Length: 194
Image (tube, rainbow, N blue to C red; front, side):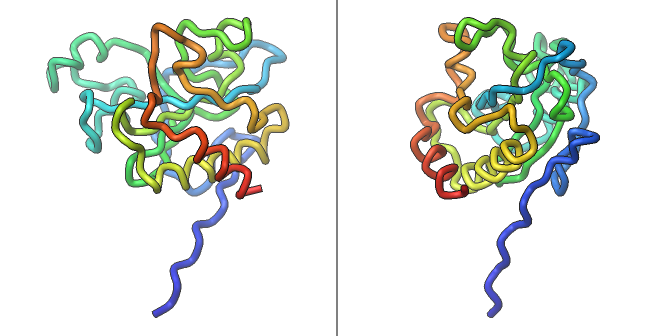
């Protein structure tokens, strides 16, 4: 039996800010970064919709601005929110892109990194389908490593030392990706991938 081939490396099209070989569900919820500002930070998030449920169309629908308020009680207020992230990695390992990487996604909210406010301006937001207290899947770590590798290769302003959780830039307000996320594992896999 033939051995399965390794997945092709992810690549960023610098002209469009789009990743090659991933599913695109482009969001209307983004705008331009401030003049002269580039991405210098990667922010890891955790998301499930409805809370603690995985799979389904709801995250795509929320980020694309068409989440039906009546589909679940939790969606009532969320349906009007204008949110996005640059990409999400589903529990299956599928990567979905919502916002071009050179644009400003609306993922961080009120936030600051090393005293610098407004992290949306200078960050790339990556959502992992999950919750704070449920271990993330092996496939998610593999794909997260591939995605971060592609980002570091495409954007010299990014560095492996500037990868944080949403909890780090909005402490007291956000807890994701939570204690279930294995930071040591991510750092080790990024070292190995070099």
